Length: 393
Image (cartoon, rainbow, N blue to C red):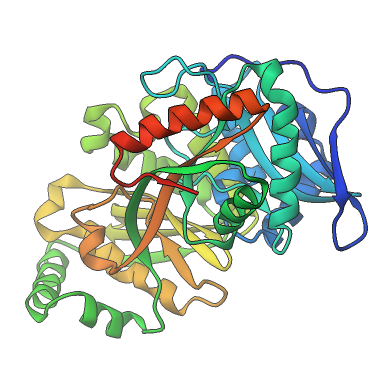
């Protein structure tokens, strides 16, 4: 982590009134290295299965390798919320000293460039108790950490989890501000793959894809493979890394093999995901050699298109688009209702193929004493004046 460590742990966790099941709700902050034993991981996995908003990037199989790669000293924190023995919420916490170009110390969800969603894992139906306990805990810690506000990046704006945050903030008279909003491609439809492709692309474009597939088939034996088990996953991972490294991401330094940290994260997280049925891997092969590959994370009822790569020597045949045509089978996959592209807004390829959009935004929330909340009100007013999408709640 680049941010300095948070202040020492509070000796007393923040307790709030009982939730509907009868247990007191408790929010506390722990070292992530204290949450790596089998019992805690089992609780974490159960929370992920029952979360109101799917987020693979905060599940144990992905977040622990990420923390291990980027925080080897183990200084990072997890904010956990419990109701009795039940874990009802979890998110990684950082204490940046700067907010953009301003020297404004604050608290924030800890993310890294290969984590594409910041939604905390929260048990469905427990959104309000989670926000109550979490923000009360951060109110207590804000002075000790020097934090002026709490910042939530990459939040899914149309989910009940986020709507509950704004509703709770309004109820407490606590200012919450949407400081950035964007949309990225999403796949969600009742149509089957062929019908979806027909409504998404013009007849001319579909004809061009068929032509490219036919011309590519003339170059050798063209095969497609889809797997969601762990057999051969290590070899698949190495083939993906090699394919990505040879393309534009390798030249720009953004390939997963471009640093020891991202390389370790990719190998460990995909291996773990495959062993627990969270990974779907697709390959378009020519004479047994992959020329396009795709890794999907499966987090029912959702899924996430994590990473894709293609051989640029065959770019004129659009192998990446041909692979995405096969990926439309997600529309018929049992237990999966939607897929988040994890792509940048206005992506030239996926935006033309997936017609739905997911709203993602950054949210800042007042915490701490009345003085700190007042200062945040002034600061957020300045930011809203600079941002046409900013909305105060």
